[in-house]
Length: 517
Image 1 (cartoon, rainbow, N blue to C red):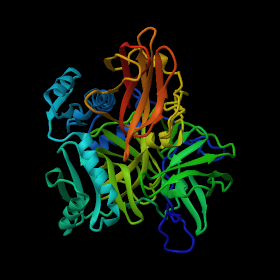
Image 2 (image 1 turned 90 degrees about the vertical axis):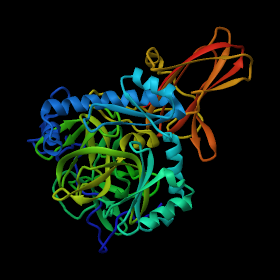
Image 3 (image 1 turned 30 degrees about the horizontal axis):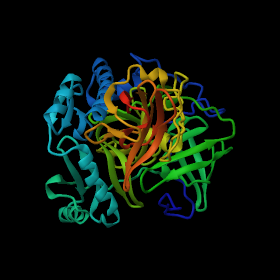
Image 4 (image 1 turned 180 degrees about the vertical axis):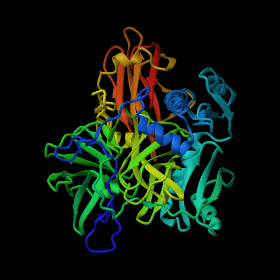
Protein backbone atom coordinates (compact mmCIF):
# COMPACT_ATOMS: atom_id res chain seq x y z
CA UNK A 1 0.00 0.00 0.00
CA UNK A 2 1.39 3.40 -0.91
CA UNK A 3 2.21 5.67 2.02
CA UNK A 4 1.76 8.78 -0.07
CA UNK A 5 -2.00 9.01 -0.64
CA UNK A 6 -2.52 12.51 -1.97
CA UNK A 7 -0.71 14.14 -4.85
CA UNK A 8 1.18 17.11 -3.46
CA UNK A 9 2.53 20.13 -5.27
CA UNK A 10 4.26 21.55 -2.20
CA UNK A 11 5.84 20.28 0.98
CA UNK A 12 2.73 21.01 3.00
CA UNK A 13 -0.48 19.30 1.92
CA UNK A 14 -3.62 21.35 2.41
CA UNK A 15 -6.00 19.14 0.56
CA UNK A 16 -6.94 15.53 0.82
CA UNK A 17 -10.49 14.70 0.08
CA UNK A 18 -11.90 18.02 1.20
CA UNK A 19 -14.86 18.91 3.37
CA UNK A 20 -18.01 17.18 2.24
CA UNK A 21 -21.46 16.36 3.55
CA UNK A 22 -21.03 14.24 6.61
CA UNK A 23 -22.68 12.60 9.53
CA UNK A 24 -21.44 14.43 12.61
CA UNK A 25 -23.98 17.27 12.79
CA UNK A 26 -24.04 17.43 16.56
CA UNK A 27 -20.29 17.40 17.10
CA UNK A 28 -19.68 19.64 20.08
CA UNK A 29 -19.01 23.17 18.98
CA UNK A 30 -19.06 22.34 15.28
CA UNK A 31 -22.69 22.48 14.17
CA UNK A 32 -24.34 25.76 13.17
CA UNK A 33 -27.44 26.41 15.26
CA UNK A 34 -29.46 26.78 12.05
CA UNK A 35 -28.76 23.17 11.06
CA UNK A 36 -31.78 20.99 11.73
CA UNK A 37 -33.16 17.60 10.77
CA UNK A 38 -34.96 17.78 7.44
CA UNK A 39 -38.65 16.98 7.31
CA UNK A 40 -39.43 14.07 5.02
CA UNK A 41 -41.97 13.18 2.37
CA UNK A 42 -42.71 9.48 2.38
CA UNK A 43 -39.35 8.98 4.10
CA UNK A 44 -37.41 11.15 1.64
CA UNK A 45 -35.93 14.51 2.63
CA UNK A 46 -37.34 17.37 0.49
CA UNK A 47 -33.78 18.53 -0.26
CA UNK A 48 -33.12 15.22 -2.03
CA UNK A 49 -36.38 15.53 -3.97
CA UNK A 50 -35.49 19.09 -4.99
CA UNK A 51 -32.06 17.99 -6.21
CA UNK A 52 -33.63 15.14 -8.22
CA UNK A 53 -36.08 17.60 -9.77
CA UNK A 54 -33.25 19.92 -10.79
CA UNK A 55 -30.83 17.27 -12.09
CA UNK A 56 -33.22 14.57 -13.37
CA UNK A 57 -36.29 16.62 -14.33
CA UNK A 58 -38.60 14.77 -11.91
CA UNK A 59 -41.36 16.25 -9.82
CA UNK A 60 -41.79 15.24 -6.17
CA UNK A 61 -44.18 12.37 -6.84
CA UNK A 62 -42.05 10.98 -9.66
CA UNK A 63 -38.87 11.17 -7.59
CA UNK A 64 -40.54 9.47 -4.62
CA UNK A 65 -41.93 6.73 -6.88
CA UNK A 66 -38.51 6.10 -8.43
CA UNK A 67 -36.80 5.76 -5.08
CA UNK A 68 -39.50 3.38 -3.87
CA UNK A 69 -39.23 1.33 -7.05
CA UNK A 70 -35.43 1.19 -6.80
CA UNK A 71 -35.66 -0.20 -3.28
CA UNK A 72 -38.10 -2.87 -4.49
CA UNK A 73 -35.86 -3.68 -7.45
CA UNK A 74 -32.86 -4.10 -5.18
CA UNK A 75 -34.56 -6.85 -3.19
CA UNK A 76 -35.99 -8.61 -6.26
CA UNK A 77 -32.61 -8.52 -8.03
CA UNK A 78 -30.81 -10.03 -5.04
CA UNK A 79 -33.39 -12.81 -4.77
CA UNK A 80 -33.21 -13.62 -8.48
CA UNK A 81 -29.41 -13.59 -8.43
CA UNK A 82 -29.46 -16.19 -5.65
CA UNK A 83 -32.24 -18.24 -7.23
CA UNK A 84 -30.89 -18.39 -10.80
CA UNK A 85 -27.24 -18.75 -9.81
CA UNK A 86 -24.84 -18.95 -12.75
CA UNK A 87 -27.70 -18.22 -15.19
CA UNK A 88 -28.01 -14.67 -13.83
CA UNK A 89 -26.74 -11.98 -16.21
CA UNK A 90 -27.28 -8.85 -14.13
CA UNK A 91 -30.18 -6.47 -13.45
CA UNK A 92 -30.95 -2.83 -14.11
CA UNK A 93 -33.76 -0.30 -14.07
CA UNK A 94 -34.71 0.93 -17.53
CA UNK A 95 -34.57 4.61 -18.45
CA UNK A 96 -38.14 5.06 -17.21
CA UNK A 97 -36.83 4.32 -13.71
CA UNK A 98 -39.55 1.76 -13.00
CA UNK A 99 -39.10 -1.24 -15.32
CA UNK A 100 -36.73 -3.82 -13.84
CA UNK A 101 -34.90 -5.80 -16.49
CA UNK A 102 -33.01 -8.96 -15.57
CA UNK A 103 -30.59 -10.71 -17.95
CA UNK A 104 -30.54 -14.52 -17.91
CA UNK A 105 -28.95 -17.22 -20.02
CA UNK A 106 -31.78 -19.77 -20.27
CA UNK A 107 -35.54 -19.95 -20.57
CA UNK A 108 -36.08 -21.57 -17.18
CA UNK A 109 -34.48 -18.62 -15.43
CA UNK A 110 -36.58 -16.27 -17.57
CA UNK A 111 -39.72 -17.82 -16.11
CA UNK A 112 -38.48 -17.06 -12.60
CA UNK A 113 -37.85 -13.44 -13.62
CA UNK A 114 -41.39 -13.03 -14.95
CA UNK A 115 -42.85 -14.59 -11.81
CA UNK A 116 -41.00 -11.98 -9.75
CA UNK A 117 -42.55 -9.09 -11.70
CA UNK A 118 -39.48 -8.22 -13.78
CA UNK A 119 -38.75 -8.34 -17.52
CA UNK A 120 -36.33 -11.09 -18.64
CA UNK A 121 -33.65 -10.37 -21.25
CA UNK A 122 -31.95 -13.38 -22.84
CA UNK A 123 -28.17 -12.96 -23.10
CA UNK A 124 -25.13 -14.98 -24.11
CA UNK A 125 -22.93 -14.42 -21.07
CA UNK A 126 -23.74 -14.66 -17.36
CA UNK A 127 -22.67 -11.96 -14.94
CA UNK A 128 -20.20 -14.41 -13.41
CA UNK A 129 -18.61 -14.96 -16.84
CA UNK A 130 -18.27 -11.21 -17.36
CA UNK A 131 -16.93 -10.72 -13.82
CA UNK A 132 -14.31 -13.38 -14.52
CA UNK A 133 -13.29 -11.48 -17.67
CA UNK A 134 -13.02 -8.26 -15.66
CA UNK A 135 -10.83 -9.99 -13.09
CA UNK A 136 -8.44 -10.96 -15.90
CA UNK A 137 -8.11 -7.28 -16.78
CA UNK A 138 -7.66 -6.40 -13.10
CA UNK A 139 -4.71 -8.80 -13.02
CA UNK A 140 -2.86 -6.81 -15.72
CA UNK A 141 -3.91 -3.34 -14.59
CA UNK A 142 -0.29 -2.24 -14.22
CA UNK A 143 -0.11 -2.29 -18.05
CA UNK A 144 -3.18 -0.05 -18.52
CA UNK A 145 -1.46 2.78 -20.41
CA UNK A 146 -3.97 4.75 -22.48
CA UNK A 147 -6.92 3.25 -20.59
CA UNK A 148 -8.89 5.00 -17.83
CA UNK A 149 -10.92 2.03 -16.59
CA UNK A 150 -13.19 -0.92 -17.33
CA UNK A 151 -16.49 -2.31 -16.09
CA UNK A 152 -19.16 -4.91 -16.74
CA UNK A 153 -22.08 -3.38 -18.64
CA UNK A 154 -25.04 -5.64 -17.89
CA UNK A 155 -27.21 -3.80 -20.42
CA UNK A 156 -25.00 -4.74 -23.39
CA UNK A 157 -23.78 -7.99 -21.81
CA UNK A 158 -20.16 -7.01 -22.42
CA UNK A 159 -17.01 -5.88 -20.66
CA UNK A 160 -16.49 -2.21 -21.51
CA UNK A 161 -12.93 -0.85 -21.64
CA UNK A 162 -12.70 2.95 -21.49
CA UNK A 163 -9.91 4.26 -23.72
CA UNK A 164 -8.47 7.74 -24.04
CA UNK A 165 -8.83 9.41 -27.48
CA UNK A 166 -6.60 7.72 -30.05
CA UNK A 167 -5.88 4.76 -27.75
CA UNK A 168 -8.53 2.30 -28.91
CA UNK A 169 -5.81 -0.09 -30.07
CA UNK A 170 -4.22 0.04 -26.61
CA UNK A 171 -7.54 -0.93 -25.01
CA UNK A 172 -8.00 -3.87 -27.36
CA UNK A 173 -4.40 -4.93 -26.80
CA UNK A 174 -4.88 -4.86 -23.03
CA UNK A 175 -7.97 -7.08 -23.29
CA UNK A 176 -6.13 -9.48 -25.58
CA UNK A 177 -3.14 -9.58 -23.22
CA UNK A 178 -5.50 -10.49 -20.38
CA UNK A 179 -7.02 -13.33 -22.41
CA UNK A 180 -10.51 -11.85 -22.73
CA UNK A 181 -12.45 -13.01 -25.78
CA UNK A 182 -12.88 -10.33 -28.43
CA UNK A 183 -16.65 -10.72 -28.73
CA UNK A 184 -17.05 -10.10 -24.99
CA UNK A 185 -15.37 -6.68 -25.13
CA UNK A 186 -16.43 -3.27 -26.38
CA UNK A 187 -14.26 -0.14 -26.31
CA UNK A 188 -15.64 3.24 -25.22
CA UNK A 189 -13.57 6.32 -26.03
CA UNK A 190 -13.64 9.13 -23.48
CA UNK A 191 -11.39 12.17 -22.92
CA UNK A 192 -12.11 12.05 -19.18
CA UNK A 193 -9.16 11.46 -16.89
CA UNK A 194 -10.51 10.35 -13.49
CA UNK A 195 -8.66 11.51 -10.40
CA UNK A 196 -9.35 11.36 -6.66
CA UNK A 197 -11.52 14.35 -5.81
CA UNK A 198 -9.19 15.86 -3.25
CA UNK A 199 -8.96 19.64 -3.21
CA UNK A 200 -7.26 22.68 -1.79
CA UNK A 201 -10.49 24.57 -1.11
CA UNK A 202 -10.63 25.26 2.63
CA UNK A 203 -14.35 25.75 3.11
CA UNK A 204 -15.61 25.95 6.67
CA UNK A 205 -17.95 22.98 6.22
CA UNK A 206 -17.35 20.19 8.68
CA UNK A 207 -13.79 19.20 7.87
CA UNK A 208 -11.41 17.01 9.74
CA UNK A 209 -7.64 17.02 9.42
CA UNK A 210 -5.02 14.32 9.08
CA UNK A 211 -1.42 14.67 10.24
CA UNK A 212 0.95 13.36 7.55
CA UNK A 213 4.71 13.36 7.19
CA UNK A 214 4.32 15.90 4.38
CA UNK A 215 2.12 18.23 6.44
CA UNK A 216 -1.58 18.49 7.25
CA UNK A 217 -4.25 17.07 4.96
CA UNK A 218 -7.92 17.97 5.04
CA UNK A 219 -10.85 15.59 4.35
CA UNK A 220 -14.53 15.14 5.13
CA UNK A 221 -16.62 12.54 6.87
CA UNK A 222 -18.78 10.14 4.91
CA UNK A 223 -21.14 8.19 7.24
CA UNK A 224 -21.19 7.70 10.99
CA UNK A 225 -20.57 4.18 12.27
CA UNK A 226 -20.18 2.81 15.76
CA UNK A 227 -16.87 4.12 17.02
CA UNK A 228 -16.15 6.60 14.24
CA UNK A 229 -16.87 7.26 10.58
CA UNK A 230 -16.08 5.98 7.08
CA UNK A 231 -14.50 8.06 4.36
CA UNK A 232 -12.28 7.72 1.29
CA UNK A 233 -9.13 5.64 1.58
CA UNK A 234 -6.96 8.21 -0.15
CA UNK A 235 -7.52 10.51 2.85
CA UNK A 236 -4.75 8.95 4.92
CA UNK A 237 -3.00 5.75 6.00
CA UNK A 238 -3.58 3.56 9.03
CA UNK A 239 -2.05 5.19 12.08
CA UNK A 240 -2.35 8.79 10.89
CA UNK A 241 -3.64 11.07 13.65
CA UNK A 242 -6.82 13.06 13.01
CA UNK A 243 -8.20 16.33 14.38
CA UNK A 244 -11.66 17.89 14.26
CA UNK A 245 -12.35 21.33 12.81
CA UNK A 246 -11.51 22.95 16.14
CA UNK A 247 -8.05 21.37 15.81
CA UNK A 248 -8.81 19.14 18.80
CA UNK A 249 -7.33 15.64 18.61
CA UNK A 250 -10.12 13.39 17.33
CA UNK A 251 -8.59 9.92 16.95
CA UNK A 252 -6.76 8.14 14.17
CA UNK A 253 -7.13 6.35 10.86
CA UNK A 254 -7.66 2.69 11.78
CA UNK A 255 -8.01 1.22 8.28
CA UNK A 256 -7.32 2.45 4.78
CA UNK A 257 -7.08 0.96 1.29
CA UNK A 258 -5.98 3.00 -1.75
CA UNK A 259 -5.17 2.21 -4.48
CA UNK A 260 -6.06 -1.45 -5.01
CA UNK A 261 -9.26 -3.34 -4.23
CA UNK A 262 -11.02 -0.33 -2.65
CA UNK A 263 -10.84 3.37 -1.90
CA UNK A 264 -12.08 3.12 1.67
CA UNK A 265 -11.08 4.31 5.09
CA UNK A 266 -12.28 4.15 8.69
CA UNK A 267 -11.44 6.81 11.29
CA UNK A 268 -11.87 5.92 14.94
CA UNK A 269 -13.16 8.80 17.06
CA UNK A 270 -11.96 8.73 20.66
CA UNK A 271 -12.36 12.33 21.90
CA UNK A 272 -16.07 12.14 22.77
CA UNK A 273 -17.39 13.91 19.65
CA UNK A 274 -21.00 12.90 19.04
CA UNK A 275 -21.72 10.68 16.03
CA UNK A 276 -25.19 10.90 14.49
CA UNK A 277 -26.92 9.32 11.47
CA UNK A 278 -27.37 12.43 9.30
CA UNK A 279 -25.85 14.04 6.23
CA UNK A 280 -25.28 17.80 6.18
CA UNK A 281 -26.65 19.40 3.00
CA UNK A 282 -24.80 22.68 3.72
CA UNK A 283 -28.08 24.59 3.61
CA UNK A 284 -28.93 24.27 7.27
CA UNK A 285 -30.55 20.84 7.00
CA UNK A 286 -29.66 17.33 8.14
CA UNK A 287 -30.64 14.51 5.77
CA UNK A 288 -31.51 11.24 7.55
CA UNK A 289 -29.65 7.96 7.01
CA UNK A 290 -32.10 5.12 7.66
CA UNK A 291 -30.13 2.16 6.26
CA UNK A 292 -27.84 1.01 3.48
CA UNK A 293 -29.93 -0.96 0.98
CA UNK A 294 -27.90 -0.94 -2.23
CA UNK A 295 -29.68 0.63 -5.21
CA UNK A 296 -29.53 -1.13 -8.62
CA UNK A 297 -28.00 0.02 -11.88
CA UNK A 298 -30.31 2.65 -13.38
CA UNK A 299 -31.45 4.01 -10.02
CA UNK A 300 -31.28 7.68 -9.07
CA UNK A 301 -28.61 8.61 -6.54
CA UNK A 302 -27.54 11.89 -4.92
CA UNK A 303 -24.31 13.06 -3.34
CA UNK A 304 -23.47 16.00 -1.12
CA UNK A 305 -20.22 17.91 -1.05
CA UNK A 306 -18.88 21.09 0.52
CA UNK A 307 -17.52 22.36 -2.80
CA UNK A 308 -20.45 21.75 -5.11
CA UNK A 309 -23.40 21.09 -2.80
CA UNK A 310 -26.00 18.40 -3.47
CA UNK A 311 -26.28 16.91 -6.97
CA UNK A 312 -28.02 13.85 -8.37
CA UNK A 313 -27.56 11.43 -11.23
CA UNK A 314 -27.99 7.80 -12.19
CA UNK A 315 -26.00 4.68 -11.35
CA UNK A 316 -24.46 3.52 -14.65
CA UNK A 317 -22.33 0.53 -13.61
CA UNK A 318 -20.97 -1.28 -10.59
CA UNK A 319 -17.66 -2.94 -9.76
CA UNK A 320 -15.72 -0.67 -12.13
CA UNK A 321 -11.95 -0.53 -12.15
CA UNK A 322 -10.78 3.09 -12.39
CA UNK A 323 -7.22 3.99 -13.33
CA UNK A 324 -6.10 6.97 -11.22
CA UNK A 325 -2.66 8.60 -11.44
CA UNK A 326 -1.83 6.91 -8.11
CA UNK A 327 -2.88 3.47 -9.41
CA UNK A 328 -5.96 1.44 -10.32
CA UNK A 329 -8.86 0.96 -7.89
CA UNK A 330 -11.44 -1.81 -8.32
CA UNK A 331 -14.98 -2.18 -7.02
CA UNK A 332 -16.19 1.39 -7.59
CA UNK A 333 -19.67 2.45 -8.71
CA UNK A 334 -19.92 4.64 -11.82
CA UNK A 335 -22.43 7.51 -11.99
CA UNK A 336 -23.20 10.49 -14.23
CA UNK A 337 -23.59 12.83 -11.25
CA UNK A 338 -21.15 15.72 -11.11
CA UNK A 339 -18.62 16.47 -8.40
CA UNK A 340 -15.66 18.77 -7.97
CA UNK A 341 -12.31 19.03 -6.27
CA UNK A 342 -12.98 19.05 -2.54
CA UNK A 343 -15.93 16.62 -2.60
CA UNK A 344 -13.84 13.52 -1.84
CA UNK A 345 -14.99 11.24 0.99
CA UNK A 346 -18.53 12.64 1.04
CA UNK A 347 -21.75 10.60 1.27
CA UNK A 348 -24.06 9.27 -1.45
CA UNK A 349 -27.74 8.60 -0.78
CA UNK A 350 -30.60 6.90 -2.58
CA UNK A 351 -33.44 8.51 -0.69
CA UNK A 352 -32.51 7.81 2.93
CA UNK A 353 -30.33 4.80 2.13
CA UNK A 354 -26.53 5.17 2.35
CA UNK A 355 -24.78 4.11 -0.87
CA UNK A 356 -21.11 5.03 -0.62
CA UNK A 357 -18.42 7.68 -0.29
CA UNK A 358 -16.99 9.81 -3.09
CA UNK A 359 -13.79 8.44 -4.58
CA UNK A 360 -12.99 10.46 -7.71
CA UNK A 361 -14.07 11.47 -11.18
CA UNK A 362 -13.68 14.01 -13.93
CA UNK A 363 -15.41 17.19 -15.10
CA UNK A 364 -17.29 19.61 -12.87
CA UNK A 365 -20.80 20.77 -12.02
CA UNK A 366 -20.77 23.52 -14.65
CA UNK A 367 -20.00 21.44 -17.73
CA UNK A 368 -20.96 18.05 -16.28
CA UNK A 369 -18.87 14.98 -15.67
CA UNK A 370 -18.72 11.52 -14.14
CA UNK A 371 -18.08 10.49 -10.55
CA UNK A 372 -17.21 7.19 -8.87
CA UNK A 373 -18.04 6.16 -5.33
CA UNK A 374 -16.86 3.42 -3.02
CA UNK A 375 -19.86 1.30 -1.91
CA UNK A 376 -20.42 1.76 1.81
CA UNK A 377 -21.57 -1.82 2.50
CA UNK A 378 -18.20 -3.07 1.31
CA UNK A 379 -16.48 -0.81 3.84
CA UNK A 380 -18.78 -2.04 6.61
CA UNK A 381 -18.22 -5.70 5.75
CA UNK A 382 -14.44 -5.50 5.38
CA UNK A 383 -13.96 -3.61 8.66
CA UNK A 384 -16.80 -5.23 10.65
CA UNK A 385 -18.48 -1.86 11.20
CA UNK A 386 -22.06 -0.94 12.09
CA UNK A 387 -23.72 1.96 10.29
CA UNK A 388 -25.59 4.36 12.58
CA UNK A 389 -29.16 4.93 11.41
CA UNK A 390 -32.04 7.19 12.34
CA UNK A 391 -33.98 4.18 13.61
CA UNK A 392 -31.33 3.59 16.21
CA UNK A 393 -30.66 0.07 14.96
CA UNK A 394 -27.72 -1.43 13.13
CA UNK A 395 -28.33 -1.75 9.43
CA UNK A 396 -25.30 -4.01 9.13
CA UNK A 397 -24.57 -5.38 12.62
CA UNK A 398 -21.21 -6.93 13.46
CA UNK A 399 -20.73 -10.55 12.50
CA UNK A 400 -18.44 -13.29 13.66
CA UNK A 401 -17.33 -13.65 10.05
CA UNK A 402 -16.54 -10.20 8.64
CA UNK A 403 -13.47 -11.49 6.81
CA UNK A 404 -12.84 -14.51 4.66
CA UNK A 405 -11.89 -16.72 7.58
CA UNK A 406 -13.90 -19.80 8.61
CA UNK A 407 -16.05 -19.12 11.64
CA UNK A 408 -19.09 -20.29 13.49
CA UNK A 409 -21.98 -17.98 12.69
CA UNK A 410 -24.19 -16.55 15.44
CA UNK A 411 -27.73 -17.75 15.94
CA UNK A 412 -29.45 -14.37 15.88
CA UNK A 413 -31.02 -14.96 12.45
CA UNK A 414 -33.91 -17.17 13.59
CA UNK A 415 -36.56 -14.49 13.19
CA UNK A 416 -35.33 -13.66 9.70
CA UNK A 417 -35.63 -17.28 8.57
CA UNK A 418 -39.39 -17.54 8.49
CA UNK A 419 -39.81 -15.72 5.19
CA UNK A 420 -36.48 -16.12 3.43
CA UNK A 421 -37.06 -15.68 -0.31
CA UNK A 422 -34.95 -18.54 -1.71
CA UNK A 423 -35.99 -22.05 -0.80
CA UNK A 424 -34.13 -25.16 -1.96
CA UNK A 425 -34.86 -28.80 -1.23
CA UNK A 426 -32.51 -31.73 -1.32
CA UNK A 427 -31.76 -35.11 0.18
CA UNK A 428 -28.58 -36.67 1.62
CA UNK A 429 -28.52 -40.45 1.75
CA UNK A 430 -25.54 -41.13 4.01
CA UNK A 431 -23.06 -39.54 6.38
CA UNK A 432 -20.28 -37.71 4.59
CA UNK A 433 -22.42 -36.81 1.58
CA UNK A 434 -22.65 -33.13 0.58
CA UNK A 435 -24.66 -30.98 -1.83
CA UNK A 436 -23.95 -27.46 -3.15
CA UNK A 437 -26.74 -24.88 -3.54
CA UNK A 438 -27.77 -23.51 -5.97
CA UNK A 439 -27.38 -26.71 -7.95
CA UNK A 440 -26.55 -24.82 -11.15
CA UNK A 441 -23.39 -23.25 -9.81
CA UNK A 442 -23.22 -20.26 -7.47
CA UNK A 443 -24.73 -16.80 -7.01
CA UNK A 444 -23.34 -13.27 -6.88
CA UNK A 445 -24.15 -11.18 -3.80
CA UNK A 446 -23.57 -7.55 -2.94
CA UNK A 447 -21.73 -6.64 0.25
CA UNK A 448 -23.87 -6.96 3.36
CA UNK A 449 -25.56 -9.52 5.58
CA UNK A 450 -26.37 -12.99 4.31
CA UNK A 451 -28.76 -15.16 6.32
CA UNK A 452 -29.80 -18.77 5.94
CA UNK A 453 -31.83 -21.44 7.74
CA UNK A 454 -31.41 -25.18 7.29
CA UNK A 455 -34.38 -27.40 8.21
CA UNK A 456 -32.69 -30.77 8.76
CA UNK A 457 -34.44 -34.14 9.10
CA UNK A 458 -35.22 -35.36 12.60
CA UNK A 459 -32.48 -37.42 14.15
CA UNK A 460 -29.86 -36.35 11.60
CA UNK A 461 -26.89 -33.98 12.00
CA UNK A 462 -26.61 -31.79 8.92
CA UNK A 463 -24.11 -28.91 8.84
CA UNK A 464 -24.29 -25.75 6.73
CA UNK A 465 -21.34 -23.96 5.11
CA UNK A 466 -21.27 -20.68 3.18
CA UNK A 467 -18.38 -20.46 0.70
CA UNK A 468 -16.97 -17.56 -1.33
CA UNK A 469 -15.24 -18.08 -4.66
CA UNK A 470 -11.59 -16.98 -4.69
CA UNK A 471 -8.69 -17.27 -7.11
CA UNK A 472 -7.90 -20.68 -5.64
CA UNK A 473 -11.47 -21.99 -5.55
CA UNK A 474 -14.33 -21.87 -3.03
CA UNK A 475 -13.40 -21.04 0.56
CA UNK A 476 -15.63 -21.35 3.65
CA UNK A 477 -16.39 -17.95 5.17
CA UNK A 478 -19.17 -18.90 7.61
CA UNK A 479 -20.64 -22.09 8.98
CA UNK A 480 -23.33 -23.45 11.29
CA UNK A 481 -22.67 -26.82 12.90
CA UNK A 482 -24.01 -28.96 15.71
CA UNK A 483 -27.27 -30.81 16.21
CA UNK A 484 -30.74 -29.76 15.08
CA UNK A 485 -31.78 -27.09 12.60
CA UNK A 486 -29.21 -24.48 11.68
CA UNK A 487 -29.28 -20.70 11.34
CA UNK A 488 -26.46 -18.70 9.80
CA UNK A 489 -25.86 -14.96 9.65
CA UNK A 490 -22.73 -13.29 8.31
CA UNK A 491 -21.82 -9.76 7.19
CA UNK A 492 -19.64 -10.28 4.10
CA UNK A 493 -18.10 -8.42 1.19
CA UNK A 494 -19.42 -8.71 -2.35
CA UNK A 495 -18.56 -11.78 -4.37
CA UNK A 496 -19.70 -15.14 -5.74
CA UNK A 497 -21.04 -17.55 -3.12
CA UNK A 498 -22.59 -20.98 -2.65
CA UNK A 499 -24.03 -22.94 0.26
CA UNK A 500 -22.94 -26.50 1.01
CA UNK A 501 -25.08 -28.87 3.10
CA UNK A 502 -23.10 -31.74 4.65
CA UNK A 503 -24.48 -34.83 6.40
CA UNK A 504 -22.31 -35.39 9.47
CA UNK A 505 -24.64 -38.13 10.69
CA UNK A 506 -27.92 -39.60 9.52
CA UNK A 507 -29.81 -39.04 6.27
CA UNK A 508 -33.01 -37.59 4.84
CA UNK A 509 -34.57 -34.61 3.10
CA UNK A 510 -33.78 -30.98 3.99
CA UNK A 511 -34.97 -27.48 3.11
CA UNK A 512 -32.67 -24.47 2.87
CA UNK A 513 -33.92 -20.89 2.87
CA UNK A 514 -31.49 -18.03 2.33
CA UNK A 515 -31.30 -14.37 1.45
CA UNK A 516 -28.45 -12.25 0.13
CA UNK A 517 -28.07 -8.45 -0.19
